[in-house]
Length: 184
Image (tube, rainbow, N blue to C red; front, side, top):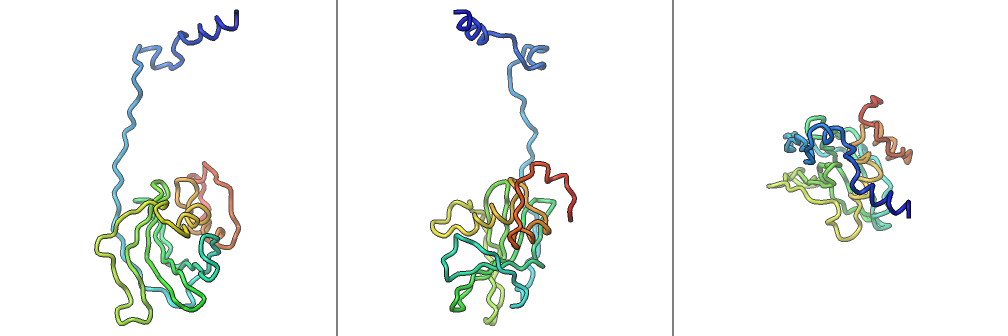
């Protein structure tokens, strides 16, 4: 009986928030959140054949392989978008090269351009690049695997050194204090 009274009494206990205690207000604080704005960047030229680094991805079919150009990898400290050249190639030689951006915090990606090495026009820009959720892909969600295992540490894009290590299979556990570490 005493425990029941203590539990019920706890429902009408004094406020535990010091602000609420002093002011008597029970409203939540509103955070001053700035609207995200994407900064324009230049699209680098399509990398040469020997510039690509293979990234092992389980989400791709067995006859497909993913490659990144580590030299073009760009993590912007202005808009926190990670930009990179991604190449998906089949064992028979068919391929798709895309210049993409990824927002770890919003879990979305955008394609800025496509690259074709054997065509007269090697680079084709997207007319209106549009951000899409990572989960929107129906089969072989390799971008989601790239984000989770290679590019992102939670909501923060990893630094180039960390991405290079992840591509080699040297994964690190998510560290919430990663933002304050300077390991570049």
